[in-house]
Image 1 (cartoon, rainbow, N blue to C red):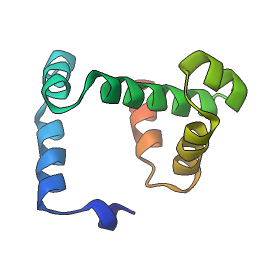
Image 2 (tube, rainbow, N blue to C red; image 1 turned 90 degrees about the vertical axis):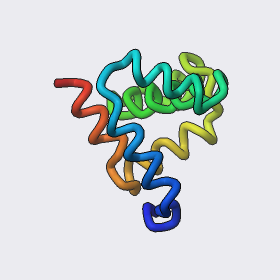
Image 3 (cartoon, rainbow, N blue to C red; image 1 turned 120 degrees about the horizontal axis):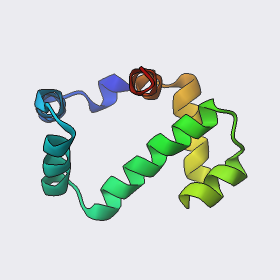
Image 4 (cartoon, rainbow, N blue to C red; image 1 turned 30 degrees about the vertical axis):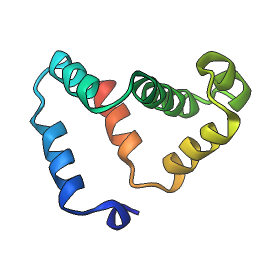
Length: 95
């Protein structure tokens, strides 16, 4: 999957994220880069990934986050068969 999105522009985007040093810097960059609803949606997906790892059901996650079960399914598919990005981030956040 990574090869499908890998190009000069996404390399620059990834380098931009990697250059951020604080949560506040990340907020500033996200505020300029994305709409408020896009940022909120990404936060909900990360929360869903955390809850899925904790064994919380799709219906409970849908109620808590407002995500559709289709989106939760997509997050779960990424957890199971993706590039391990969710796992990497969630593991680091737990440290």
